[in-house]
Length: 292
Image (tube, rainbow, N blue to C red; front, side, top):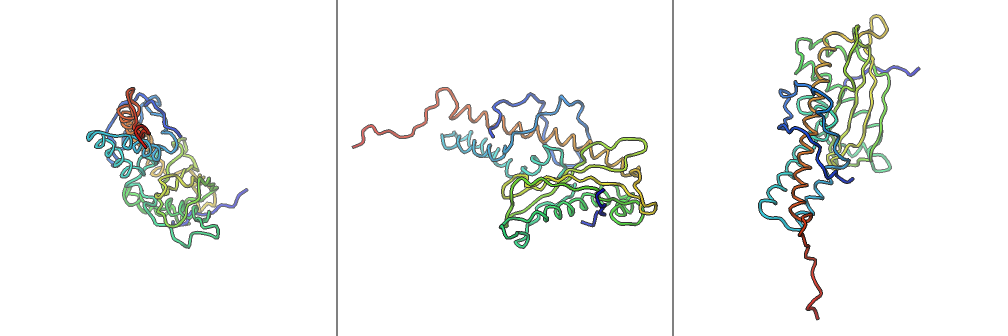
């Protein structure tokens, strides 16, 4: 049985856009209280590498030739990718950003690299630990101040606390200095049961700002532990209620972010149909006729 450790303080894009009802995108927590009515409302996940692919496709349109209005539309998509990429990339999987603190724009240190000149794997666990503590602390400070002391006590061996049962990491590509990271957590499932469950699963992603990609994914199995009774216990009511609300917000964010992404993809498809992919499109690549 694994030793329990207390939580310390700290491709090608699809050419067809799915049929969805578009809604304005907002990362404000005030607009995240609704829940997805049915699974049929949820657009599919965006294609892999969609951020890099959209930039490449826009570049091809511009090189082929665009009118002033088309350049304006292309720049609007590029601006959205530049300003919203973290919220969209994380939100498309249900990770809450903005006010839901994890690690946001933290610089990696040169000393975090190893002899292979990339960030040593152990640092990803440290990133996740710091982000997880910030995630919990956010409930105490910004979401549920009425139970501020109880939330903070969860990270200390006083009464009811949290213990890490298992922690797994899946590394996607090696990051290197210089870079910045953003790290976010989400609940994997809706806490349910009577009594409330005695453990919960968190998913975590580490985003590389330089590559605008997920550099690592982590899975955290966390036990609610009664230090006085020296055993696991049910999740406190204040915690279960806030987690249920957070899970519904994650669902709403998934819908919002995916809808926004497919809206951007649709805008790029329209540019392609008006430029290099239109029926009468002819690219002038030069001619040898008339040359010496």
